[in-house]
Amino acid sequence: MKVLTHEYARLVHEAIEHAQAAGDLPLFEIPEVRVQPPNNPGFADYATPVAMQLGRLARKPPAEIAAIIVRHLPDAPFAGAAEVAGPGFINFRLSDDWLKQQVETIIAEGDDLCALQIGAGKRAQVEFVSANPTGPLHIGRTRGAVIGDSIARVLEAVGYRVEREYYFNNAGRQMEMLGRSLRARYLQALGQDAPLPEEGYAGEYLAEVAARLVAEVGDAWREADWPPFKEFAEKVIFEWIRASLLRLGVRHDVFFNENSLYEDGSVWRTLEALRQRGYIYDAPVWEGASEAERAQAAASGAANAAWFRSTALGDEKDRVLVKASGEPTYTLPDIAYHVNKMERGFDLLVNVLGADHGTQYKVVQRGLQALGYDPSRLHVIIHQMVRIYRGGALIKGSTRAGDVIPVDAVIDEVGADSVRYFLLARSANTDVEFDLDLAVAQNNENPVYYIQNAHVRCAGIFRMAEQRGFSDAGADLSLLGEPETTFLRQALRLGETLIYALEEMAPHQIAFFALETARLFHPMYDNVRVFHSEVPEDVARARLRFYRAAKVVFKRLLTLMGMSAPDVM
Image 1 (cartoon, rainbow, N blue to C red):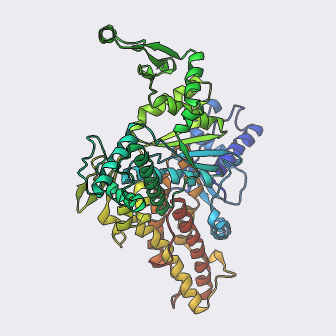
Image 2: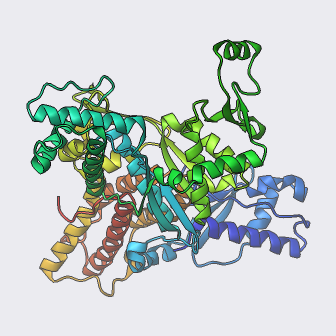
Image 3: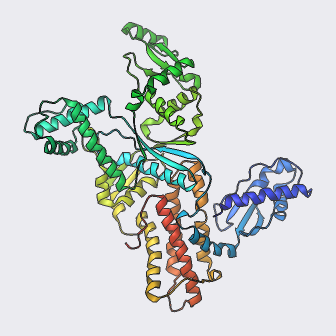
């Protein structure tokens, strides 16, 4: 299906060329032509301000330039009226006849409706979730899962071959504390008085893991130290995480373990490569440190650390990559990991990260730049917090304290579709206020119900048609009216929405578009009947065909959001 903003931009560009060839406009380099739907759809379907951009180049008033462009517009099947408005806008109307025939195009494209070829032949990787296996997936982490999977769906819709990746670390102090915490729970399950470590994980979920461990090994691990407990907890918790993600329709193609970067030497090779390029220096403080900071370091006998000279690439200060103890900070393996991703040949890399990673990813980009890679291949979506409400009251949770809000509990209460929609429907850079009461409401106030019910209503019409033995075959689409063409105008903007979601890395735009489309559909449905005593058979046939297309539209939108398209509710 055509992206009409692009098609109209092409027509305008050709019109300017024709006008220049005819001598109606002087020769000049034609700037990019931008066409958009106007803020007020009552004025036009699409509009461009290009004539106002050309005033200096063409040495004519914008309104005159606009009139010249309109005179030279080539014919196109989709193009209806074009007129000059205001100080030099050009307004476009789609051809009603062409618009009605797009019912057949929508039906023919089906599940691939508005699929584009922007990324054809290119590979994209989306890395998301990436939670270390220390506890069940909670609702905050799930926002990253939904955003990541949704942007992957957008990338696939515009032609990319997409690989979904999960990056995790099963070593370090966090995992040691997990192992020690499970060991305490295991001994408690055996009847011993075993306190949890001071910085351990207090969640009751570890009691469940301990019970499973007792069932498998009995008391054989009574004298064991923490490492096997860590490995057992990791295995069980990863099973939980994957199962939770699958309930949401989220899958990963690759699970990448940070430890592999140490095992194959990538971490230290990355450090050495940065050093050879002049970006590493050894010192107790960074080069831009104040005299007071230097004096304090000298007084404390601080040893040298390995510093990344990131200020040479625009950072506000240099960053430690290896501490004085010889232990790498998390920044060094992160840079090594992204080098690994670059070397795998992806054309586009997308990371979905929580709000606490805002500075870290910029340091990683500078590390890639220092090593000679193009950092523009890496796009990062930073998402904000999720707050859960019930009865107007905020529900709080903490992973280490053990009172997390597991996503499974939320799915059990409101369903996977509601979880996905409510976590997607806001821009990633704003907080989500998840209202559990609204999410379970079976009424039009609940956007999930409202959107899915549009698909249900379409399916219901076809059940009724089957009962009556009535078919939409051979429908005369010229009999469709203004409410139907208004809906089609909206539906045909899906391609534009996909492009915008891609360019801005903003998958929430699909959720906005779906709700807007449902808001157009339901009032129309109430008035545009198929089976009614006053509706002639040929009109009923055309309307039934139209609803077949509308059903395709809503299924496509729901699928892009990772939601189900029910036939009944």
